Image (cartoon, rainbow, N blue to C red; front, side, top):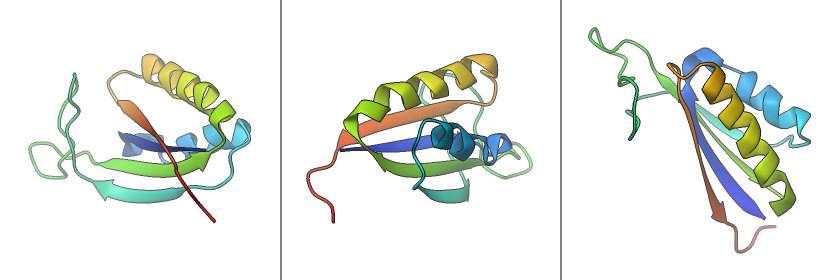
Amino acid sequence: MKGIFIAYDQAYNMEIADAIEKIGVRGFTMWQDIAGRGGFTGEPHLGNHAWPTMNNAMLTFVPDEKVDDILAKLKAMDEDTPDLGIRAFVWNVEKSY
């Protein structure tokens, strides 16, 4: 099992959840209106007068075989709208119940 943390521009709203559901992943936890700045390109999302946009984030736990499909879909979405920004980070899950 893997955990995937996804940070994305709030403009995507529920599109990320819809995308992973189409891959067969139902469960997630989402945080809305979080501030941040990507490590590569793009503008800060700080929710202030200079940088008014915000980010959302999602955490989902999936079977190993779903990871590549999810990352490929997120990468395609990011390439379609690079100014918005999506990043995903995957780590191993040792145990769950």
